[in-house]
Length: 422
Image (cartoon, rainbow, N blue to C red; front, side, top):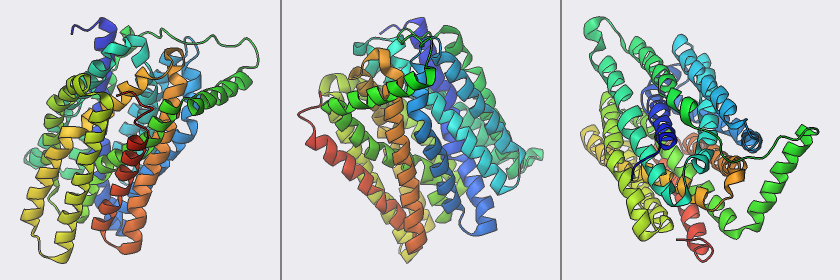
């Protein structure tokens, strides 16, 4: 399927911002931060979970407002640009400090900018393409993100961290340079989006009573969601299962660090995740056409339940002493491959499926509400991890607790299948 120029530029932003998802959220920075904060407090993974919860909680509260503003004609792209700029600048801030509290502040604000920009970016899906092309385009976006943004800057970071000492670059400096690479990559490859993507749908800004009208629109959209059973049941299921996905992504290396797994091994394993995710994301888009988007989402949830069980057994085995570090490392590699088969697909198909069941002229608001459910859920996952870790003192049980989120999402989808298009 040949892409139009706006479609190509929209896909390119996945290529751009995925560097943040890998370097800052999933791999390099969480390992470094957990080590630094852990040395100071003894609970580095706890503070990482708290920081992630704060960032996602703030965005969750503001998501409907951002979505409502994005739906005014001429507002969507400037709002996207401002949020992306915040994300890029505070990624650089994370590299400027050695104090773990200041690094955490930089991470929280950069995460808000990154997530907020992605909210507006997702809502552009209805502007750049037609419903019948959404599954393919959304899947291609994630695939390009994995093969480009998640891989090339990631490899550069691995080289710096692994071989930097040969050139006088210690681990701390290597991490800081990785953050700078992430910010530059993100900024440069956002340019095509800013140049080519236009807002096609939207409402006119009111001449008076702007604030009142905006909040009125938010209430109206919420009522529309509640009145549409297919939409609200999907959003409720999404609330649970996407939180599980996000928690697995955000806590994986932090979990491995606490279990004393080798950080270089984990980083390379996560690069394998990105490489596996590239073809699997495209495959998900094609299979959704044949088998239906909903069936593909349900299948991915089942795979995540299995992944969590395997992750629990890995940690439990190390904690009880009947599994060696070498054995756990093999399991971690298996987990990395399994996650790669479904991580991009479940996110891509969820995005496109939602885009097909909402009115395009109100995509900003609808995606804003999807985001608020996703972000409030994203507060729950890391808190669930941190709470279980704090109460039991065992990281393995924290991973096991994440299964509850996937089961809840699966139950809602299965219960609402008669209202949801396949």
